[in-house]
Image (tube, rainbow, N blue to C red; front, side, top):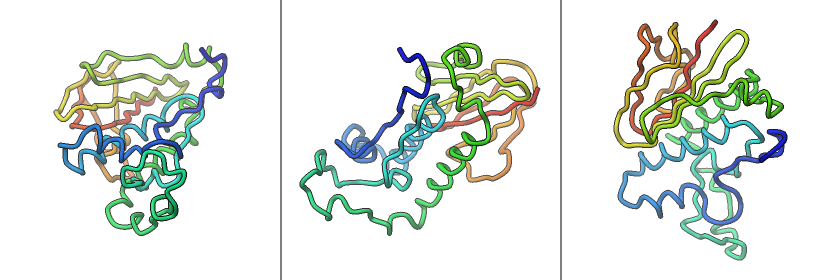
Length: 201
């Protein structure tokens, strides 16, 4: 139990052991590369949206791989070097996704609460179908709902309150403006989607 959120360093990949992409390859060998990358986005997104200190491994933003090497301490540059060529092409979409989340975190204190008391008062889990995860972040002028669908099928969720909720950011949509506005209290999440909804008070 932490007395302060800043005592928690959150990560899913670091210099030790497999990179996240390599671990997903080992644990999900039969799924498509595209779905594996979506899983990667969910895990990295959770790190950036969680309370505490986010930690990203160098190259995580463009799906770094060490070709399955679990302990690359003595593996040399062939394994440990940064493959900057992989930063181009379709991987740029993932870099933009991570930039959006970092910008969101910087702009809104909802994602940078300073005390355990604040977290208890402002962070609330919402009811969503198992095994989805959803939670509400309360603010003075706006509220956020974050929902993660780690399954390979679509799910419908019910927003925690009535009002005009906007799907603001999603790992499956490349948009700088709000994606959609909900006129009803339900929303649909695609397979392997992490969505951030916003409502002004």
